[in-house]
Image (tube, rainbow, N blue to C red; front, side, top):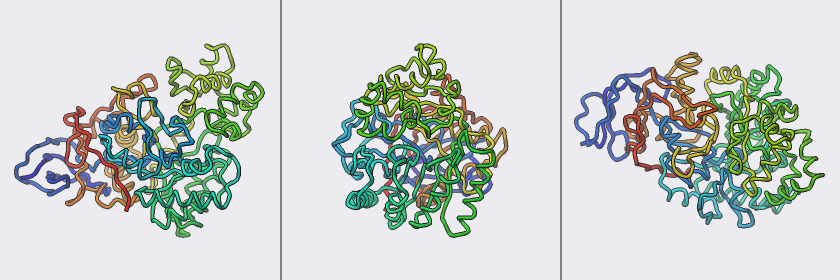
Length: 528
């Protein structure tokens, strides 16, 4: 007898093919049968009038620490996500040196999590011991590797330091890292020369893992940023995934089309390159990312000391190359506070309004918030509508474009109840399927499902996920395409979407009849 039977649904198998009518039988955590009249099962889920698809794969998230705080991941489960890939933009929770403070870790929350790991393998073991609502694969970040060797030094990397960095990368891949990531707009990636990145990417290529990059620039010098990514992949032989490719405010009007032409030419020259986007025009990042690199030396203690020095504080305000052109142009009415533990009452306000409330100019107010946050200042976030929806649409028209969240897995109860990862965190899948598919018809439903199932699975080298076929892991989602809708907003970002009925993770129901179950059977997936 089957363990689980999903009946009455229209199956989208994840390949982009049209839906077909079939029931799906699950046994031992895998798909055992597909067809009609499959017999009896210990549990039955009714999918009549709905679509059954592979569980959705979020190829780019920043849940590295939040999953340790609370692994239930309701924000992802309730929109059909069964696997997410952490360790992005050069930031991973390991390797981690005892000389660093836990508050420097990506997504740190002061919630009693004991940071008792050092190596990448030890971190994966710690994560795997946590109840998880989703499966998790992890990339190792260039920033974490570099800081494990150099702490927060801005000095050039020596040959011996480079060898030590490569050893850490090798150890991470041997422990199961699914790829390598860089964040070349962020410290310390923004001070790393291309040669350093190429050498680490060569290590990535030797292990046949994916290289994901947040490129060095996506506005004024967008073409240099994307060309560097292609050149790195060409020289190293690494398979390239360009993260959240859409250009930012400040890029010329034709930047997206030009970038796609660059990538098309690279493919003709045998560079394996694809990309992903956020299905939203909101762009978010850390406030410290707009500060000059010299201000970051010495980590949070060093930055806090400089914030208390009037001369250095004033110099920080006039960074000629901030990460956002909106900051350079002082368009603070368009920049909103997204996260501040010290001042949650200001979240959602523009920095122009925050400045008025605090009787100071907006950039001074931003520095005040960093100082108030103390050691956790890296997690002060702001957001803006820095992307162009026309660029999102153009990307979605490209067959190699995956879709992801660029956010954190959260739960609107417990220790993460008040946390916001991004303004699309609770509804990114619903926005793709509801807005861009049903309402705007930018792409078909079968193709949209492919972009968040078999396409990311193929990029990651996962052969038993991302498609509905006999023998595949039984990660499945049942949803009503006519009802799927993102109901989150700037004022209410923690609202679950509508239209998702059932989610199955390895044969276990994590969402049943639209309600989150108590099950969190997720595991860490290690590359081999």
